[in-house]
Image (tube, rainbow over all chains, first blue to last red; front, side, top):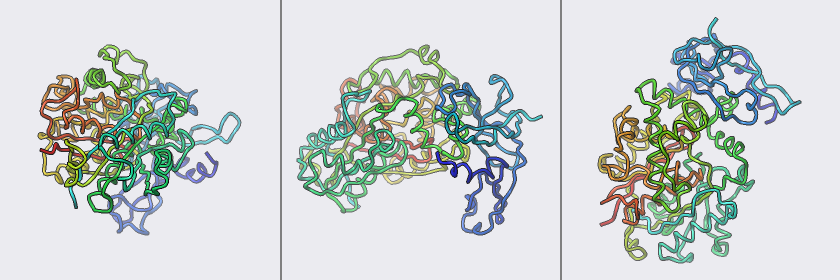
Length: 133
Length: 389
């Protein structure tokens, strides 16, 4: 994929920037232009909102059959994490034995390499989650 | 709106069909449906083609005109339209064809759907399937389609105490059904133990929890119900067509163990047809993974929420019980030419309602249902079909 495609999203992938609706207070991650809860009333009222980066594992899997770009990481844990602000995201869980990951486990965001454009190409960074310190 | 009937059905063999191209498959299914309807191509007014990703799977876009062209229809200059919606393309093509006939825009239409998945390697085909999830916020972090369904399975086990064995029993049942379908990719029964011991793909799911990546095509011919008997002694009516959408990313859903798109599409279809789930005798549901069938039969209200696992294990959805689910073998055993799924499901239901189910015939089938998913449930389509007495 072209580099700008990753570059456009770095604010959210590096710093967990989402949005908070100025109308109903709903927090979304990644950022949204229109609030899914209150629609038209949110026009022009969506504010940048930084997540604290802490949350809970809602569900997870251990991926054994991975896309080419993730071949060297497998088997890896992929989870849906509910952030304390209420928004949910999909992330790998790292710095823990795969067998130790549980639903309800507390986790926090860490800045990691996500992948790269082939062997010598641009490296993409972003969040992964690890057990809360 | 006019009532619409299916007057012809056709499908190819499903499987790894190395000697057949995309256009071969589309033509074969389409011509079989036209022959079955007892019409000639001169009777046709339009063609709708369901296809998910020919652009990435065979580097060919614009497949609706292509299939019509190679079916010998180019001189007729028919309107041809491709319909896309993840794995639900075929079902959406039926919906478009139905709407065109119901509204009076067209009289006789062919709805075809085809996918050629084996001209690329398995890893590539899986990556293309994963493009039906959110590329920016799921796939880029290492999510795969099996991984996303595995996370639903894990949560279903957590919330409802569904067991690994209950989930696996979907594959055992669908292989048993597929063994009775001469067009199925896998006409072979499998044991529960084989499913449980298969190589892991995305825990808790393994290789035998997944539908294969297949080549294949299927087609229907539709016309107004009032004209149907001119062409077909046993027309089948499309009673209703329900469609719904939801968030593309799984993590944004209200629930991880319910697909609201299925719930809503089902309600819309049942409401429009003035039928209830208990009136359905035969259903083809989107079992791209074993867990998908468990969630689907719950969301379509064939069983109570959380009871999909025990009901499947008890044989309540097998041939011979009150409702037979996936008599064709489902995506699991019939095969999964992804965009062709919705039409292949409809072909099976029409055959069942006509009494042409052969060894897998459901006794006295009056009402049949198809349920088709796009992505992890961002699109769901439910069709209800009825025997015309």
